[in-house]
Image (cartoon, rainbow over all chains, first blue to last red):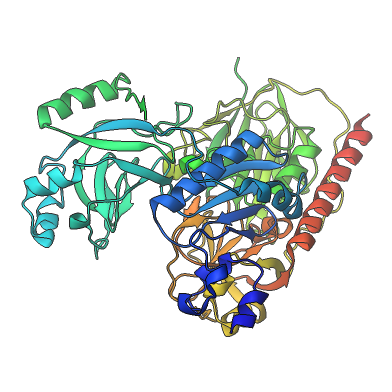
Length: 271
Length: 319
């Protein structure tokens, strides 16, 4: 067995291969911080994978590499997409190649920890009123909390924007307080209203557009986190920090009115 | 007086598309763009437009457009057109440019074996687009006219109020028939499938499902065996990514693909072969054969050279 381990091209393979228990990996090559894997996605994208877990340490490395590559401005790189556990590097195969990119990216993979731009901090107003919080009672029942406690938990901590996906501007925010962790709804809704603030598994999110969706809806924000007329179109970006601030229905109505008039601009502070 | 093509009748769906909305994927914005960007680029080359000029992508049969401009030059790739001037009608072959006069009516189609055809207009459309592109993405209301497919009653504004007379051009021969098997690069999650699952992908013939759309081509046929579940931690997708959800039936992600996805991706179609997928109608069959990244890159470079040479040839002819 040990022989086959040495034959593997990268240490990264060790920790990601579930067929090899950690205990049989010799101490000398056991890695707590595995080297990323550069996985081709055809001839137009290369995924730099930092494992298969959702956690802050992984995300920080993804974001740090994003910043480095954005600064490097490698020729032929079309765009960069940070996800939970990988950085997707989209490229133009007529202008560069996987081999060239690997040579340019590999030297940038060292000492990624802590090497990224300071997070922008946002506070997003949320109305948890029953009119908007379609699943608040059910979440309370299933977590053995009162609705007020669910709200308190949800708005008690800052969240990290792991990535934006699913819908334009839709932020995956984590990690949710463990008390609130629930699987997705068994019956997804065919239409979730825009602005809905929802939870599922270890994440919370904001539906930036009306959309089908299977997450538990706890409230609604009057702030538009997405607008095609802004540049960039999404308020939030991967790596940002978000807090939810409870507001009542009167405040929601006031802010919604301002948002409709295009006068509600959220502002961030620097961490 | 503003120049436009007026939509006087419409049959199936037609959308404005260019080469896509790049640079916004990190904000969750799909790239979109023409399904068959080879046909789009040939169409643009024929009427002398830059490669990325938006054209009308139409399915099966196009709308009827009436020229509300001094004149306009158009070309359709993938379908012949019928032009009605006054009471008389004539057919314009696919790939042939034609100068239309005010009041002429043009109907593109039916498509010749392909699912889609492209109608390009010299000078392009005078629309602002969203986030740097005219590509229509209805789900988020981006691009085109109000972010939706075109419909009867629309006036598609033209950039040029009229075009000078000159020798019309015809696209050089180009084989648009999709291959029986498209080339794929295995991965990035080939390790989520059994040996047998990989063989199934590469040895089967699949049928294009009616459930297919611009987001993804759903395939019917032999289910592909997973090795360790069918959920992954979501990561990025590429054009031509082949996702395999729980039922084992592959979905090839196309122009409107979501930027991220949570199903394992067994392989990715070589970019040179992606445009051919856009031509496949529901019911058509398709298979996959493995190739390497370097080979796929070389195939794309060769395709780019051929498209460049075609553009040169057309430009030389008009000098």
